[in-house]
Amino acid sequence: MFLKHLFSYICVYCVYSFKTIKSTQIECDPISNTDFGRRFCFIRHINDGIIQNVTFKPNPIADEKRELIFDNCTLHFLPLGIFTNFPNIKTLYGWNIKLKNLTKEVFRNSKELFVLDFSKNNIGVLDTNTFHLAKSLNQLDLSRNQIQIIHTDAFTGLEQLKMLNLDNNKLQLIPANCFKPLIQLQTIRLSHNLIKMIPTELFEQNIYLHGIYLNDNAIEWLYGELTFRHLTRVNEFDLHNNPNANLGCCVINAQSIDIRNTNSIGCYIGSRTRRVVANNNHISYIDSYDAISTNLEYVDLANNQLQKILNLTRFESLIHLDLMNNTMDDIGLNSFANMHRLEILNLQNSGLSKIYFGLFSHKSKLKILDISYNNLGNIDFQMFVSMTSLLKLHLDGNNLTKIDATELRKIFPALSKMSISQNNWSCQHLASIIKYLESNGIALDSIDSTKNTENIKGIPCKSNDESQIIENPVSLKESDAEVSKQKSVLTNIPGGIAYDQKLRLLQLKYVIQNTIESANEAGKKIENILHIN
Image 1 (cartoon, rainbow, N blue to C red):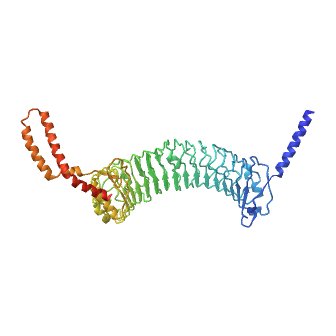
Image 2 (tube, one colour):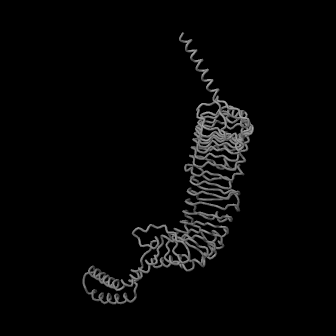
Image 3 (cartoon, rainbow, N blue to C red):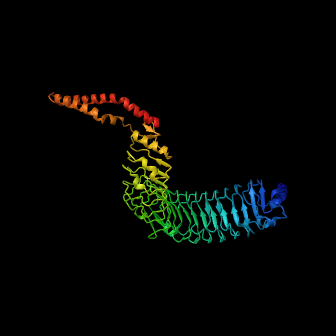
């Protein structure tokens, strides 16, 4: 009897559930059925976690719909029959709908589907043949999910796919052959994952790749020459922020290469390469496939271990060159001779020990020059006469005591900003420099901390009043005569130590007297200097 009642209860529950599911229908929102929205279908506010058996309400203009958007929904699984009810859908969007799984049955009859975007969801696994029925798919965006596993045959059937975005997932391992079906692939995005290794054959069949983005991973091993050497169409290659990479030497013939912070020790420039960003590495050499590279325009090698500039001298098309914080010992007269297009040159802390006449010849296009922190004791601005387009000049952190500021506007007619901090300026000379810069419309870039330090406009300087007093020829003449007189008397006093002490006290006495006599004059000079500030 009990079993009979239980069976009856189950049958009633099933019938009730079936009727409930059957009566639930999805339809496009009212705006989608107007003339304005004929090509779109917005499905809003569906919050059923399991909606596999829910049906679509018939739509008289369903054949005209080209885009289907799930908006503000919660769908752990996609409903079946999407493409049966909307056979001409080309774009399907489902951002942030809490989607957990994609099944191949969802894409039945999706012969027109061109763009699929399910970013910002909770998808964890891409199963075998998931997209097998979406043969016309061109763009697939699964970024910002929780994907940890990709089966080898997950992308089977996507021979037309050109863009695959898997950024911001939890991938650690990628099967070596999983991209093999993607023979038309042009852009692959794998950044911000946990990938540790790139198999050498991963991109073997993707010869049309234009963009490869592997930045911000945990890559420990990458054999660049075997993995990328066959790719001849790459425009952008991004590997930056893989600090544990055993990259060795980067070998890829891409137009733009970003390998900053990858533990690289060297870099080869391809014949197509225009831009190289390789700062914060251990690079000690840079070379090219060809004897002369005519395309390279931008090179950033800041914070490396470059010791020789020789191989860079042949890159004649350079516009931007950053060699900051290297220790090169061969910067000579002809180091930049062939770089007639240079607009930005950063030699901060680069081992530049001396500037030769001719070092910066033919640099009429140069706009920014940084030669700071090189311990240069003297700079003759006549060495820069060709820099008629210079806008910014950085001279900080050298050992400069004097420059002829009156030449600046004549030599650099376009100069708009200059930095001269952390040098050995006297306050009087610094005041004259600042006065000239201000009167000629040249902004001063101050970076120094002036706490408890004499300064003008935030730039430290040393007061030269004491040296003026000591070197006053009239005062010293009188004091020296008196010291000599007393010295002859003290010579006959026994005791060498007492003699030295008394002599030093006598010298100090006359210095103090001279200081008092010159106090008023020194005070006036200080007032003039502070008045300028």
